[in-house]
Length: 141
Image (tube, rainbow, N blue to C red; front, top):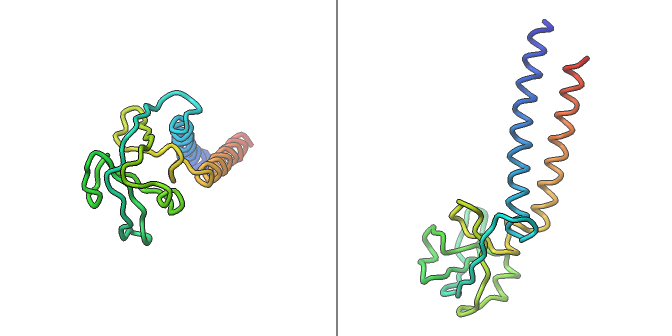
């Protein structure tokens, strides 16, 4: 019975460590997009289209550049929260971040790097670390 318990705890530890690594990588990517650590490239684009489109969770506020079709998935568009979207007009310049080999664009103050996302991911990482500690203690007792 002790062997089964040990194997089960090791499997759980492995899974939670994987989750914590994933969350840590996401947090690093978010900080790079914000410009707090290296890893992102920044380009300035001119907004060529701006629309509200029906999304999976309701209306989504989109901007596009390079003359891209805003209704089609591409690396030339980004969704914003409504307040940001209202302040941007066609012809405005926007700074867009690109993270390493990821072709997806990220607005420097966009939804992906919003304070709420940072708080959620930090709380998630803390929870994952606490679970790892608890599981290791169970393993050692």
